[in-house]
Image 1 (cartoon, rainbow, N blue to C red):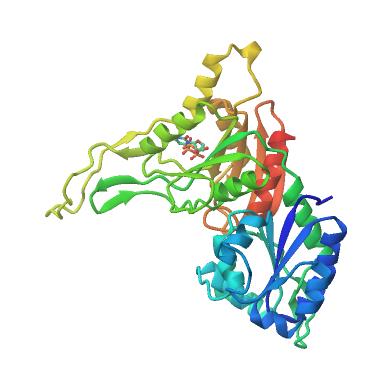
Image 2: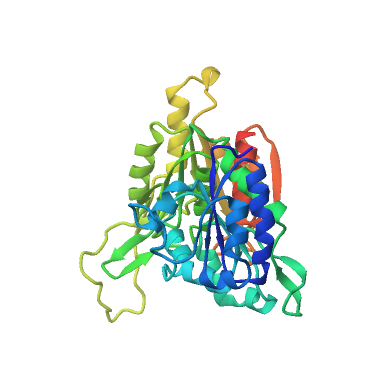
Length: 397
Ligand code: CTP
């Protein structure tokens, strides 16, 4: 199943380290080449000899102890198709999230450009610590959340390493399931920023997380991805940073030319300030000021009419697929139905932004997907990566 694939297993210092021996056996049985890197603390829980025998490869722990012409962290990062960090302690997760490279494992993670699976295991109070959760959210990796149950430290709660079968299945999925390979997918994210003067602007609460989850997922599913975003994003795929709706329009129109699918997850400002003041606007003696706003072009609607114009309706190709998002604070479905009709896109993902537990700036979402033929599918509340996967499943079948 995994022949020709190299899996880099990163083991950190937690009691669940012994379970990784079973995982390495599963990878070997599936014909993978397995490289193992351990943090020095991991060596307190599992021996080098055991790991070497199971993986049939030398085990790396310290930097500068591998014989290669390249620095070893780069050499490992280049050789492996996927990195699996299990068990991942709170310490290692937080160090990687902060870009700290103080041992071989964290240095490899920093240099690694291919998919990474992280399977945390720790005490339940450590798992619930908001700092740990914030650091986990910073990682654009596949996180396999711990299970709940009796913990080695004597506590009862969430913190047990998930099953090694689950880690194995996720590894196989990420290495072999590439339904979007050969497709060029463009995704927009974030709220546009419309300047008023050199120090002030109009924007909205969009965090860009849903668009980013879609872009990361499309990449994992094999697509060639371009993310056009108003946020600072660092990824190994093509990221184009824009600011205003007009900037976003030019970038989108250029990228749309030879794409197979565009997903407009960005919250584009409907209006911009008519004249941006070149100098900081000064306070006057008046109690009220008036800003004149002018309408921004509707990027999504323009794309849909372009697609229609370039091919007569009878010959409409299935691609490029145009997917819009819709943010509503009331009458979600009625407004979404009206919006898909008016804009003319193939799919519309409807979000209820009045709920605090989903949508804007949350890591979770719950959406309804509408298609141009009147079909509708509700996706139950889940983290945004899961929602992203389900969206691609719906639009590509
Ligand atoms: N959109 C766009 N250009 C705009 C405004 C919105 O391309 N000037 C896109 C968004 O990226 C999204 C979809 O249109 O995919 C719907 O955005 P939304 O803000 O929900 O709707 P609006 O068209 O702005 O309508 P309203 O604000 O009246 O709800």
